[in-house]
Amino acid sequence: MNKSEREYISSDKIIQVLEQRISILNALLLEKRKALKNVPSGSLRIAKSNGVVQYYRRMNPKDTTGSYIHAKDKVLVKRLAQKEYDKKVSLAVQAEIALLNHTLKTYNKMNDRKLLAEKVFEKFRPLWQVLIHPVRIPDSLYVQEWQSVTYTGKDFSEDMAEYLTARGERVRSKSEIIIADTLFRLKIPYHYEYPVDIRTTNGEKLTFYPDFTCLNLRTRQEFYWEHFGMMDNSEYSERAVQKLRLYEQNGIVPGKNLIITMETSTIPINTKQIELLAKSYLFNT
Image (cartoon, rainbow, N blue to C red; front, side, top):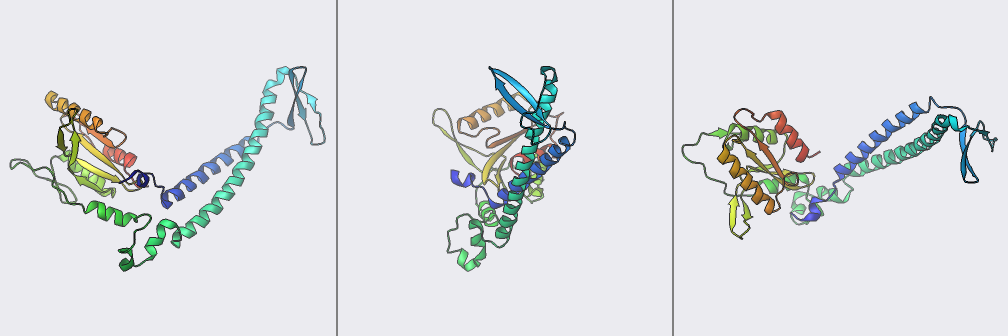
């Protein structure tokens, strides 16, 4: 996947951002309207004479000079200044809300009618679609292609207990079932133990099998998810640290494209924790 694809902003994301912006502006408008209900009358005039700043209070528009405000009334000066600011902010917010509502309505209409550039492909029949290289593959086809990749995972030893996920695949622990089933329930595409080549500092090539390779469909960015389940075992935890160091040397960095979960025999993971991480990094909305 190239960089331009990862940074692509979908029409759904634009709609979401517009809706969020309108919501924020509506809340701000209510806040400013409430503040303007309890303000001093009149308006502020500021002048400078002989290098000294002076403040005046004008009680009506025809009063071009106003009455002098003494230095001890600095609170009044600030309230009048804030009043003027809040009035202008309210006008700006109202204008922006009107503009964004109109934009959102028009954009939604174009989206529904498949008139946006990335939606035009969906107007073609399947027999046409197979002949076309679209500006952006629809999410459903992208996931289908991503999920259909064939690969050889890591072998299971004969004496290993059998743990099956809701998707019917075999994993290595109950904790991995929790992770896999959470991803499946949230409809986050993933591969289990998909191989990735790692280079050591001396150039040696190793093949690692991250527990999960996940896809954030909105950004189309892949994340590796490693679960370390025996961190109270000193040898195991040391190997885990070595593995993370090698990941970092290969550009696989926690928070950027690597999700890490850990547990001990007394501090297990739970579904709530896994869901929070999945939604933070991988959720499609």
